Length: 172
Image (cartoon, rainbow, N blue to C red; front, side):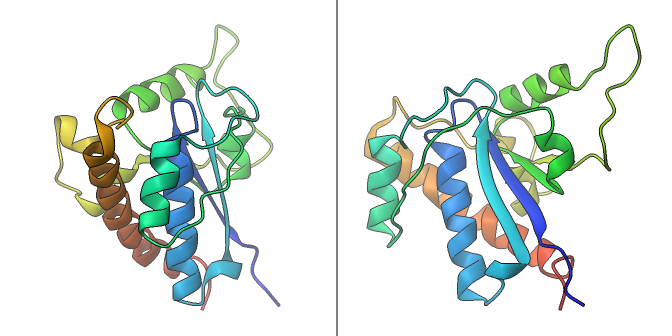
């Protein structure tokens, strides 16, 4: 009997820079360890427009590391928080927006058809003692190629730690 794949969703603001890069890196790491079939990997953005390609800076840094980043943005849906097992958030601003979206209303807490996803900051997976700005994968859009490289390196470290963390949950 096969186990259902572990759903992993990466979330940033517009879903064109960091979260698609994280999804591509995590996918490659899982493939390299022969675990890709044990995961369902996607990305979204809390303020994303539907259908935008990845940012050229992300495409370039991905290509520099042997990744072809083909992507079409999508907004985070409330159902994603129940359809995925793990939601990895790229910064505290996005985490605050997700908390706001899931806070409930005067009618009570938000409930879904299944167990809600575990929501956590991606950087904290690699650095559990991180605090403040160290919990963010900074948006590199205004920082040039060096910023994209720094974001890629931080994402790669965190995705490697995430794969180690989830490998046992993805079956043996």
